[in-house]
Length: 242
Image 1 (cartoon, rainbow, N blue to C red):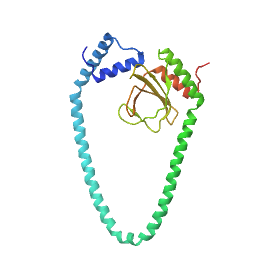
Image 2 (tube, helix red, strand yellow; image 1 turned 45 degrees about the vertical axis):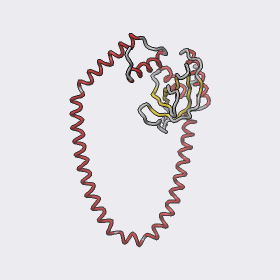
Image 3 (cartoon, rainbow, N blue to C red; image 1 turned 180 degrees about the vertical axis):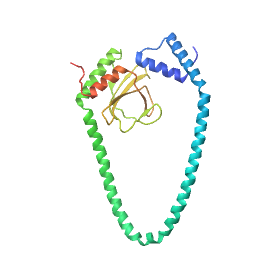
Image 4 (cartoon, one colour; image 1 turned 60 degrees about the vertical axis):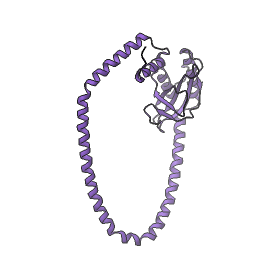
């Protein structure tokens, strides 16, 4: 069998995550044939799209150049006006220095107060949407879910490495990590799930299969059952659901 492309390898990975088994040769052949057909159809429209994009870029550059020229003219006017008030500003330098020193002191206190408030806010937000009872419910569910998936050894872990989306951006500070679980099979294969809650109390389940490195690269899991149960737990519904 020919070497698989990165896109085809990604499809195989997603298939294994959802079905917990490798795809058959027939399943891969059908899926890849559909993908190639879609790509050919997509390429058919690229030519017109390229022309539209080039036109749009040229238009954007012309607008940007016009704006730049206007800004340069305005800057010259402002510079001329500022020269007229230089002497006045020099006379006020002494009093301005004293005022600036006082303002800097106040600003520093305000920043420290704001920073402290932000930290307290994050703690309050985490305690508002997550607590020990919900953590216990999640642990119970992961144990049962792992057994169901023939993966009985899911372990709770601390997420100590930075988390990045597959596209390259780091996980938003607005999304708080509340739990992590992973299951190792073989020497260097792992299913890892990272559970996060955003500022509005909505949960997400992130999936990573990094077995080494200095960060976790994640995508949002395609496992619907796992996402739905986490949403229930975040909303306060215990597990098991007696």
